[in-house]
Structures are given as structure tokens and as C-alpha cells.
Amino acid sequence: MAKHHSLASDLAALWFQAPMVIAARTQAAAVAAMTGSATDHVEASRMVTEKVAAIAESVVAANVAMIKEGMGMAVALAAGKTVSGGHDRVTAAVLRPYAKRVRANARRLSK
Image 1: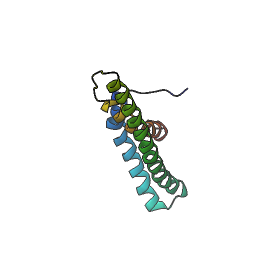
Image 2: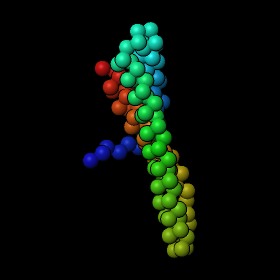
Image 3: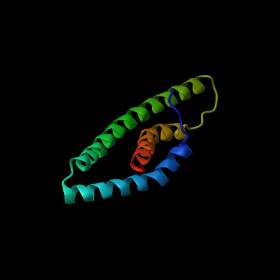
Image 4: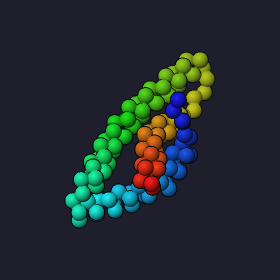
């Protein structure tokens, strides 16, 4: 079963771990430019592939979260209840794919 993180932990991952991942990958790109190492070029390709996958996953997650929030609001309004915004749930859904990859990359690149 997947471990779910809160919005706060996802934001913390992006705040603290993303700069470490960027620094490690920048160093790898500089080494690749100087040495022409195939391993470093693989890392650059992986970086681009992961970003495209995270964007696609994030868009789908945002749409699903907005549909769920809209359906919840429609049911609440039909029942005559007051409706509060579910912006945190949508924001969490959008950030989760990025935070998941940042955590994984921070672990992998710190070895």
C-alpha cells in the first residue's frame, strides 16, 4: 500500500529536498559535459522524463480532485448545507506527484 503524505510534508519535501536534487543533478550535468560519460547523460534523460511524467500525473490528479470537490459541493448544496472550499485537497493532489519524485531522487542521489 502506498504511503500517503500530507500537504505539509509534500511542501517540506519540495522546500528542503528539491534544492539538494537540483544541486546533485547540476553537478552530474557539468561532469557529463566535461567527460561525456554515458551514465551522466542517462541521468539528464531521466530528469526530463520524470518531469514530463510528473506533469501528466499532476494534471490528472488535479482534474480528479476538482471533480470530487465539485461533486461533494453539489451534494452538499442539494442537501441545503453550507459549502466550504476544498482547495487544500486539490493543492495536495497537484503537489503529490512532484513531492513523491523529489523524495525518491533525494534518496537515490544522496547515496
